[in-house]
Image (tube, rainbow, N blue to C red; front, side):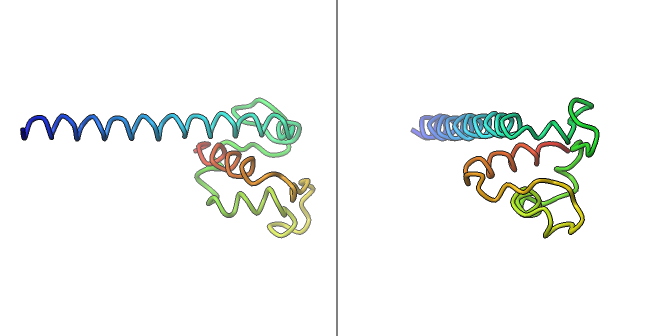
Length: 106
């Protein structure tokens, strides 16, 4: 009985882990799509691909999620003289997934 409970416990943990990984992968894939759809690469680069104004390599180590969200929604609140376009109407899911993707850029 104890062995069966242990096996069941491992199965549940594995299933939960796989589910979390699946949804994280879906979130990150959608975040990459938002990056492409919003044409972020016109100004920003990742691993040398894209615009030369600002590389986003390492941005996930420099900024917290809320700071990224603020940069995307209201960039002038972060830096008054920025030329970055604001995205105040970006749907919440798109903003959350784009932020999650950018946080992976360590």
